[in-house]
Length: 423
Image 1 (cartoon, rainbow, N blue to C red):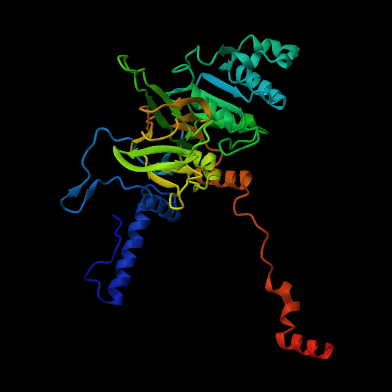
Image 2: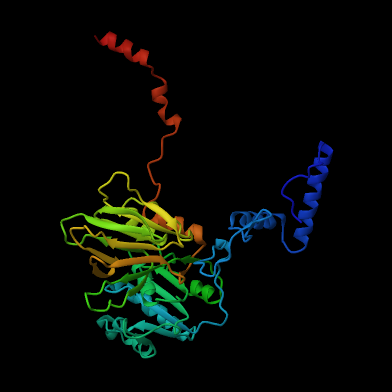
């Protein structure tokens, strides 16, 4: 058993030495009973201490009340690894649209998945309508073996085991849109302009995809926001059915084409927090913190942090700054009754619609995250994306003192003397 402090009766140096010897012997026996080395055990203890505690009791009497409506359980990020309870058979390949440079990798990937891995490959029907694919005679045999679907018409839920994205971050956002409930694991290759969500390079895709299909991969569980628009019905008419959407990046409420400031009421768990006056409001996930939110002055938050970010857009107040609230709360956004104009809302840049007086938008964390496959691990991938996309913390390096020796050989007195001589 591991002990974290010395016993109370260890008064002298000899007792403390004996105590430490006992700890080392205990660690050594732990190593022999399952750990490969003391370094492995130390690493395990460090991760355990840094991870959220599974113990729900505090002292002899205090404990957390059991709640069946718990939104999420926080895990040690090191334990989030992909495993398949049966071999994946169907794969959805999402390609960046209107980009001819992605066509060769796309054809290479789907051909390999069908002929080498014997998988059933789904692609969007509009992808095969590309004239460049229709003219490629070598691709005809593979083309006839592809399964197609159309967005908004065909339901892919429970039909796809694995998703591969080829392009920029927009391809992973599109994958999130297609699956409004449980999302299959997503492997995203960087073939676009941004790479926050696409950590893989395509050069050795065969080895990388094979590793994932064999279950050797770390995961980042990217939380999504569940958004419901409640419409106020006209007098004598029943209210319209609510709009229900899941978003990966952010929900944006703005003033639209109106010249007046937005006047938006913000509630958290039913309590009125503030009225937002400005150009609008951004409600984002940690994944979306490096998108529109960071451009509006918010902090960048790691995707594994369970939180919701609230960022004003050009607020007409010096004191309203971006805030972070727990992931389990419910936000309610509505147009203030005395507002001069309505507001507009968009979800991950799509489905833009107007919010009228009396309508409300309710936002909370969804129970369906996006399992994004890591190229290395959660921390390495995230900081690599910041360095690659934002050139984070890059500046010209300060010169070493040896390079400024010319300044050390002169003094203010020498300068004054030379001025006197010149005069």
